[in-house]
Image (tube, rainbow, N blue to C red):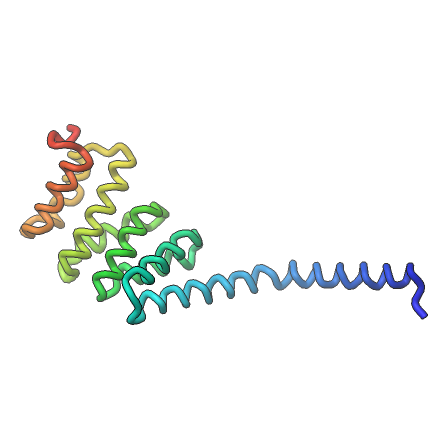
Length: 171
């Protein structure tokens, strides 16, 4: 029969073994669980569910604040479904993580994208630049080539200037 000290020692040994296993296996398990969650949220955004549920999935991705979540945003921003792309582009503007600005500018410069997606990218990028205290002149020079010749984008740029920098542009 086991004495109290042997039971305590066996229990302590079991706790140490479980703790070591958790430390060794934990990060890989967490990374897999995180990747599974990101994959499920991306699948949800690409499924035929309602717009509000897609918005909730994208907000959940943004709240995760992980590398796999951020790379999922780039994929969702390239979606052929404009609603999903706009949600992802807007979230990139709210999240302001490394790589978001270049993805927004790439979308804006892509003439094959819809005007809706390009306008969302323009608005999100300008908001980020305004938060950086950038002047209207620097913002306008950075995007003027991408919007030139497109009346909708030119009008959107004028609206963004008026909203964020005022009518004078803050120059």
